[in-house]
Image 1 (tube, helix red, strand yellow):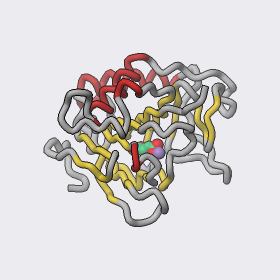
Image 2 (cartoon, protein in one colour):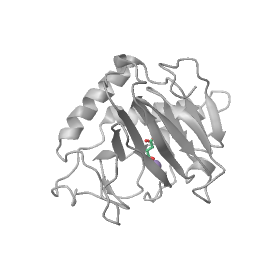
Image 3 (cartoon, helix red, strand yellow):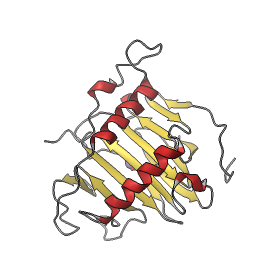
Length: 230
Ligand code: SIN
Ligand code: MN
């Protein structure tokens, strides 16, 4: 399966309670629209950059943020490491998409299997989005998303090249973990007991994206989050 071109027959999977993978959730129109929005956000008002880790090494992934500016390991209103400007707001359409993503993953009122204990879609108002671009060779080490003061789920959208996504456990960055492929248009949600699971991207698989997605090279990942900050 690894390296397969344009896989379309993958199944929805639950990797743990609250961790749901929905392959091919975004159609190509939606993917192209998001890619175009990302191109604009990458220019500014705060340009996309490689965040620098505390040891002084830049990440291999490039990031631009909405709502709140993230740098390891904090959120600030102004992008103090990238010129001091204020990042663009999270647009309403992206908040709505985040709510639809939660309804897809955890169900909605009146639907069989609705899991409001994980999070109710109507209570999901992401106030930040981290847009990551993976050029060929970029990767992300195992980490927890724990700079947020809220335990609201993280909604992850992928466009472009397929990656290997490693989803682990909440206590150690090592095994047990599961490797899955996140392809273009895939949704992954992690919340509830899985919210603070370690996860990472060991590698992307260049040349695996269908050009109809709107991205000729590399991989975009958007994570929507609630910071719990005001
Ligand atoms: C992240 O962990 O913030 C990004 C994950 C991904 O690129 O799929
Ligand atoms: Mn993360």
